[in-house]
Amino acid sequence: MADYQPPADELPAELAAWFALGYDEPALWLRLTPGPALRAITTRLGTLPADFLDERVALPALAADVLGADVLGSPELRALTGFATARLGAAVGLWLLASQHVVDPFDPRIAESAALPALAALGLRLAPVVAPRRWLSEPDRREEAARLFLLWCGHHPAGETPVVARSFADRLDSIGRDRELAAVAEEHRHRMEVQRRLRERRAQEAAARYTHE
Image (tube, rainbow, N blue to C red; front, side, top):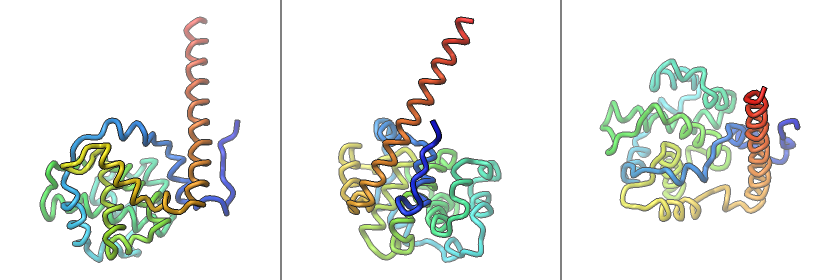
């Protein structure tokens, strides 16, 4: 069975790249740990230096400066490269990480080693739907970006339970608020999930055959 590829006019290419990374969001919600206060993240977003939005700065170079050269071969960075809007979204996430060194660490500190999915989420999932510059000027969109960043760093905001955090995230979700896009995204997500399960089953069957040989 060939990998499903949506028609070009059906799903933004960035979103298709996001789903292709194969993250298990329902499982992520079950293992979240308390993170920094939401206000700490939204306030830090408001201090974003203009340099991070300078499109002349290549995303791989910026990511390597903040996270180290080891990230250059990561699936997330490969997926982000080539999309101008995704570059801006990921750069916002890189500022949040870099700010722990140049401003103050968040409490608790966000682990940079686990932050690549958050950069991918900001760049590939949110940026093609809501322009990153709107995250800085519109309170609801800033909160959406902050919550998405925390989620994909493995946290829910301090003072909230995962259930409450998910309720707020669902209310703010820009994809969910666009019925047509939400339907297309859900169909694509379902097909990707079917593919994932087929791959897992084939791997299990292959392992079983190898064991019995």
